[in-house]
Length: 119
Length: 152
Image (cartoon, rainbow over all chains, first blue to last red; front, top):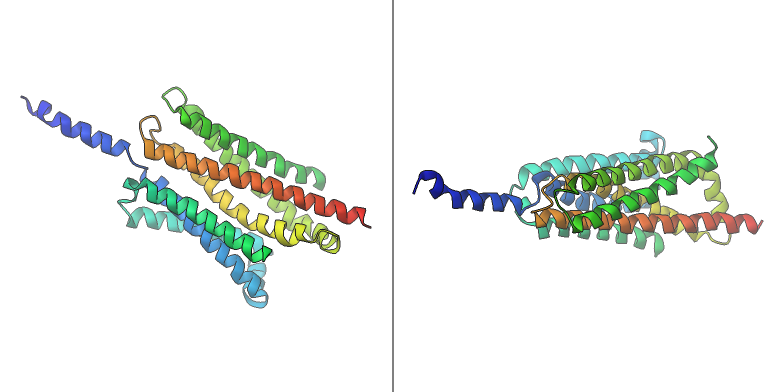
């Protein structure tokens, strides 16, 4: 049996492994979306509970607190996504964990916001 | 352009973003070499429409909403602002992030990669769910302004 033939099963297994996982950046930014959603909801509570300090600063920064809030969220999303991509190399092999962070984070963030304004 | 027209563009492009996410979800159920291009195009369209809804709606909210806010809060449906608008303007930011994630998730070998498809299913489903929630909240806000005007 030639070397090529001997390596064939390994190459197929390696190929299958790479095809059965989420890409590194998709996984990292999915986790980032979940984490940022929760942090964004906590920022809502923080700014609405501290109108003279946090909310006033957010208004002064861009002219409107919501514009500042959106910018903070986008910066957090990018920074956390890049950090997760660099520091969690095995994440792409755990799609359930990735989806859990995404769905759980968005749901928890929405519930915090709805509860804060609804209760 | 009148401010009323700007306001109508916001839910119109928002619903187009939702429809494109439904398109992504449905095509991904039958992902193949034949439709991978359509999946990626639809995911990019969904993200672009949601971003357009954010920019247009955000412009209107920052520049024009103050008068409506005062009207709604003085009317019979103050909760249209105090709950629905406050929740909508902040939950929308999560929708924006997930809509941005969607095209990133579709640029994988979806035909043979089940975990990648799983992420596309959930990302597109979240865009649809939150997008419909935004449309519903918008209806409450519009009705809050309408009943406030009717009560005058």
